[in-house]
Length: 200
Length: 200
Image 1 (cartoon, rainbow over the protein chains, first blue to last red):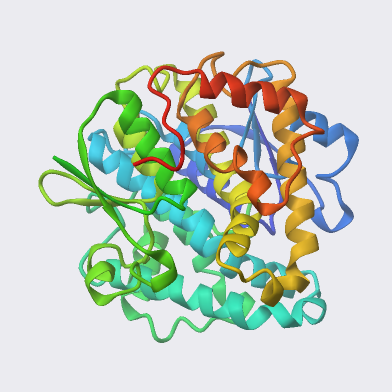
Image 2: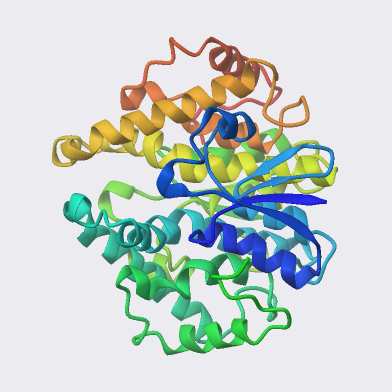
């Protein structure tokens, strides 16, 4: 059975939980406490030297890291990943956008809020907030003329972007100015096999 | 013919120049001056709303953004991208590592140095340097027992990581403590069709 090293506070972990649930694939979930440094122990670093969850352990013991790489591995050959060369590259385009231009701002402000460290990062907040708003505005633009990010249907690009966007309010972002984005959040929530971020 | 919007100072652009050169694919290269804001003009934002290069324009006018997504598109079906499902996911693992845990530190310190803005970012430098060193140390660990990052051979994962690592010194990083990494840099440089970062 697949084993997922995970944390319920992590949107990156949620991508994998949600996809596995929608695929109907059974897995064992190991919850780690990020606030207590459980991803930085020697034991965990032996599994993932980058000290991060999610981490997927395959049945032969192989470890796969990076949430969007894990998603790609699991989605290959399923309805969650298109087959056409260009659409596959577009899925990756949005997943790299998510990790580079979205997660470091929208997820990080949520994490600082969650772990009570907003004060110590006060000087960095305005720029992170501005860059997060820029990411949301860019998503809004794409969604004004598309129901989903790629190929007109729900793919792992949507899962990747949904994970932290739908809880952006926990980091102080107001989604009010983004109606197309709000409608897309509802479309994602209505997919078969949907699982809330708070559930394993 | 493919058209690449690019900048010779960009390691992300270099990934695409190098791969296209090694594939023997002809392309038109459009040089943009990042220091003069040429990726933030209304004309360019109509091509890529994220205002970044590299940007690949396909022969039908379709625009593809994000350096590692462009690499994936171009490498599909070639020797630069393995065929096995796990190895493909491992290529992505290293490419997402590059964009999340490597580029924001190693490339950004180089860019600040290049554009003369180290002083204005002085407070951020120690953490960026520490995280850059952590990325280099993690690469060193992988390369102590592997000639290349995935599948024992040169792939787009190597190109992705080579692009900013081989010029890390321009951002003040000393590669002396990383002998396995230095040997890998030489292996990459010796690949057929190698192109220096300064050449289009």
